[in-house]
Every structure is written in C-alpha cells, then in structure tokens.
Length: 166
Image (cartoon, rainbow, N blue to C red; front, side, top):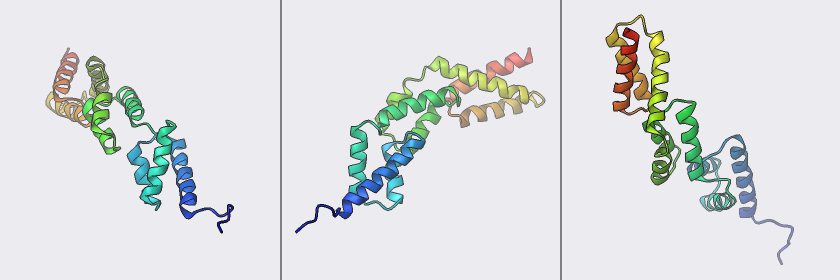
C-alpha cells in the first residue's frame, strides 16, 4: 500500500532542482546550457534537470532566443562590444549557432562603427603622449579585444589618429 504523504525521491529532487534554477534565474537571465551545467554541478540527475528545464522553458523563464537578443542589445551598446566578441560570448554561454546568428545580425554596422569610434577617441586621448605607430597598435589591439572586425578597426583608428594630428 502506497502512502499519499510519502514523496518519491525523484519528485523531491525535481522540486529542489526547480528551486535551485529559480534562484539562479532571480540573479540574472541564463541560457538553457548554463542552467543545465549549474544543476549538473549541484549533482541533480540529468533526467531531473531535463524535466525542470522543460517546465521552465514552457512557461517562458528560459528562452535562449530572447536571452541572445537582450545580450546583444546590452553588450553592443553599453559595453562597446563588436560582433565578433558578441558571437564568442554567446557561444561560451551555450547558445545555438542559429540563434547567435539571428541576434548578432541585428547589430547595425553603422552603430557598431560609431561605438568603436567613440571608444577609440576616448582611449586615443590617454595615448596622445605616445608615437603615432604605438598609438595605432594599441588602438587596434583595443578594438580587436572588444570584438570589432578588422576593417572597422582599421578605418576607425586611421580616422581618429588623423583627427588627432590636426
């Protein structure tokens, strides 16, 4: 005879995993892969994790498409990140390549160029005491680390250094 008061161990694990996932989501949005890894590190069985993530996705708390779009909007603007860096960051977070492509394609090339120019102008003022060659290398390195395409970096650095020479 089964007592209705007694819970199955898998039900208890599911409740604990769900609570852990909700705590993680309360801090910030996370991808499916991030939550899977975090719950796995906490020792929850894969079948429990799959069930919890399935429920969270069905109610819209885990949505990689929305996550990727929001990530790109925030990081491209306030963090001055280029498309290459955004793509790499989303890949590290476990977002599907198709979703990454869709999110990164929404970055306006002119907006990206202006963000690179603004960043480069700010840094160029601090490097004004250096020779033009050293300034150019450092500015190129800065833009490369921030994920701007080489063509954008070349154009922006050239323009900024030409403005400084005037």
